[in-house]
Amino acid sequence: MHTLIVVSHPVADSLTHAIAQRIADSVVQSSAESTVEIADLAAEGFDPRFGVADIAAFQGKAPLSAEVIAEQARIDRADALVLVYPIYWWSMPGQLKGWIDRVFTNGWAFDDSGDGNVGKKLPHLNVHLVAIGGADQRTFARHGYFGAMKTQIDHGIFDYCGAPVITSELLISAEPMEADAHFATAQALGRKIVATRQHKEIGA
Image 1 (cartoon, rainbow, N blue to C red):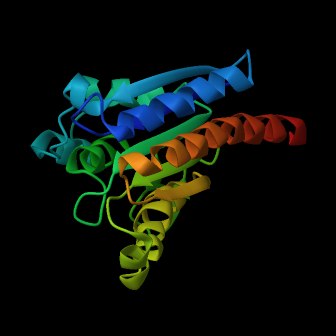
Image 2: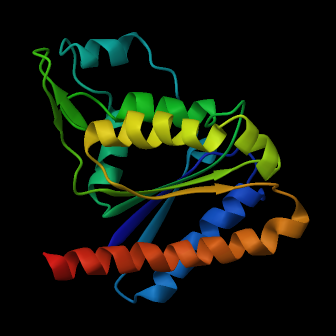
């Protein structure tokens, strides 16, 4: 099985990157047959701007850019997609949102022919979401953030494409004292990614 981990954080030695690496290590340690690719959007310089060319491609008036096709190919190679990101202004970073805007295109992630019926084209892709926030649990709960995140991302993006969200994790109070607990959660998630895929293969 192959796992694609997409990380959106501009600082290479951030907690976000450390958590992503521990997820990757745990996946590989849990199964000798597992492979992992980490896509570091900031380091790779992915352009998140949904521009004129992207709109033309969406309307079927132009082909997809080579950059978008390459990202889609990455996902096509994967059995599981993991997004690891910090919470900026109660949402995901703009670069990650732009990656979704540009890469999850009509005809590839979903099929909207304009007749009111939408075909979901990613039911084979297991999705795991790991959001990292700096506020405390009371703050997130008071404002209903976790529910809002599930509505916006789990349902609004991935359910629209038919991709099952297996994990939707919110790691909060991202202070040094919480790092070990977050790393343990990351390692458990790595094992879960492998177990979910193995269960799916047995069920098939």
